[in-house]
Amino acid sequence: MTRKSGISLRVAGVVYDQWTSAEVTRDLKDFSGSFNFVLRDSKRSLSTFDYATGGAITDIRPGPECDVLINGIVVLKGSIENVRPEIHEGGTSVEISGRDNTGDLIDCAALTDGPSEFRNVKLEEAVKRIAEPFGLGVRSEIDTGEPFTRYGLDLAETAFSAIEKGARSRHALILSDGVGNVVITRTGKKRAPADLRLPGNVLASSASYSHQGRYSKTYVRGQGEKAGKARSGSAALDKTAEPLAPGDRQASSGATEMERKGTAATGIATDDEIARYRPIVHLARSKADATAAQDEADWRMRTARGESEEVTFTVKGFGVNGELWRVNEMAYVSDAFQGIERDMLVARVTNRSDEAGDVSELTVTSPEAFDAEPTGKRRTNRTRRKTAAGSLDTTAKGL
Image (cartoon, rainbow, N blue to C red; front, side):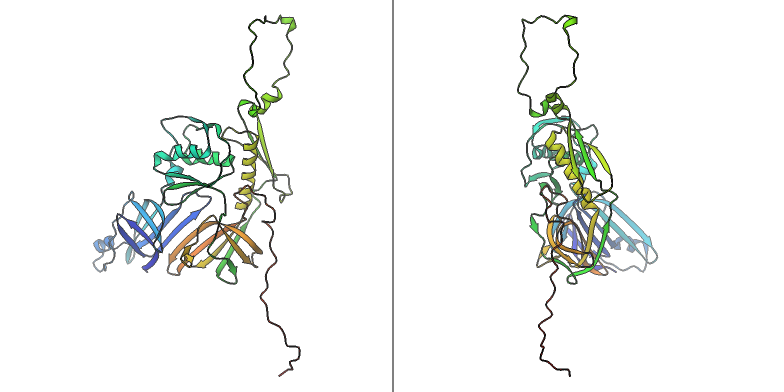
């Protein structure tokens, strides 16, 4: 059954808003937002069946740029990537899907014509150089720390991989804003438009908890340059010195302490909730000093912990009081069934419109999953507020 939806697709100035189903998803882990629409294909139906009735004429092919709107607000600017027409008994349908424009960063090579590395660049400058050929803007909402002495690009590396490895070592969150920009930020700087409460505005609640991807200790090993920033300067040469005689030469004890700082860096993060011996080692893919290696180890431990604890709530509509539900916002969650009574981070939003109506699925995770702030009590529930039952009249008599 075709129904008019609050989700619409605009292609070449034409707005399509009557769908069998429509879905728009933003996810902190997937970087690029996506959309999927299914509608009755009236054009093919009319050309195939003598008894077909008219409707919105659809002749969409992969390739065109498009806008996805929710309640009239543009939330994604992208391209149609897939069109799947289907014929079945009694009618035809077509499925249309695609992503916002940052999807090209996931699919395509970083820089095909060089350079193979950037020198002395801050994270936002490196991201800008990688994203610029794709026509994407870059916005940094945080201090990204010291410049990289050398930001290397691997052969055949995708643009997103080249960006994400630098973000890991600076404990930064890389997002697409959906409308043509890469955003470098931290988590949960804005509040969601409403709390999530069960019973209350939550229609359904489901969760996934797992220790499979979590580790007792996360190691990141990398290699830095310039003696770990401890080298004072170039060595002075004595042009009057004579070569040592073979008998006067002393065996080397290997690298000096200063040299070791310049060639090896290790970061270690401990997940205190994993009691078993479960270590994992990652190699830093960018030049890493001790600080960068530690930041990346902490980032990997936190994101693994966050991904292992996800709760999904279904609520009516696409927002509250004109404000849409969006990722990377903080929402207070009160759900006795899941045992949650605290602030949680909205990590994934799926807006869906079908025969059941307009709903949003909001996936939340622990609020420290993607930032570098102390965990503190952010993983601890507050005391659940009980609804007052009213005072009792102790003088009342039974009826």
